[in-house]
Amino acid sequence: MATEAPTVTLVLGGARSGKSAFAQQLATELGESVLFVATAAPLDEEMAERIAAHREARPSSWRTAEAGLRVGAAVRETVLESGGAGVVVLDCLTLLVSNCLMAADRSQADGAPKRADAATLLKEELASLLEATRACGAHVIVVSNEVGMGIVPPYPLGRRYRDLLGEANQRLAEEADAVYLLVAGIPVELKSLAIRSRGPRLRGTESSVRSELSTSSLDTAGE
Image (tube, rainbow, N blue to C red; front, side):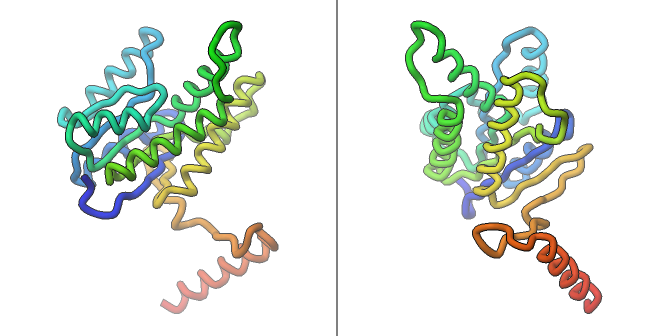
C-alpha cells in the first residue's frame, strides 16, 4: 500500500507522444509495488504484437491485470490475491471507452441482454476504478489519448467516441491531483498552469485572464 496519501494522476497525449513511458516512469518513482491494468485486447496480429512489446517494456516485478471492462473489479480481485498494491496504472482509458461503446452497441442487437448506454457504462467504470484504488490505498495513474485536436470524424460512431473520451478525460482531470500532457515526449503539468474560475461560470473570462497575467508579470518583476 502507498506510504503517503494516495493520488490520482492523468497522463494525456497523442499517439506515440511518450505518455505510456512517462506513466511508467511516474509509477517507478513512487517506489511502491505496481499493478498494471491493461485494457487492450489482441483482436488481430498487429495488436497482439503491440501488446507483447508493451509487456516486454514493463518491469518484470509489476503485476498485470487484463481487463477490457470491469476494471475496478479487476483491481480489487488482483490486490486481494497478491496482498496489496501501492500504485495502479491503467493503460489506457482510450480503449476502455472503446470497449464500453462496443459493449453498449452489442446490447442493441436482437436477442442480446439489455445493458446501459455507453456513457452510463463508462461512468460506472470510472467510479468503480477510483473506488477500488481508494479502498486499496493506492496511487492511480491513468493514461489516455487527447483526440479532440484533430478533424471532426466524418462518421457518427467516430464522433460518439471522440465525445465520450473527451468527457471522460474531463471527469478524470477534475478528480486528478495532477494532469500531464505529453507532446513529443515532453510532459507539461496542466493543473498548475490552469486559470481557475472564480464562480460557477467563467464570467468576464477575457478580462480575468488579462488580470491574472498582469498580476503574474508584476509578481515576477518584483522577485
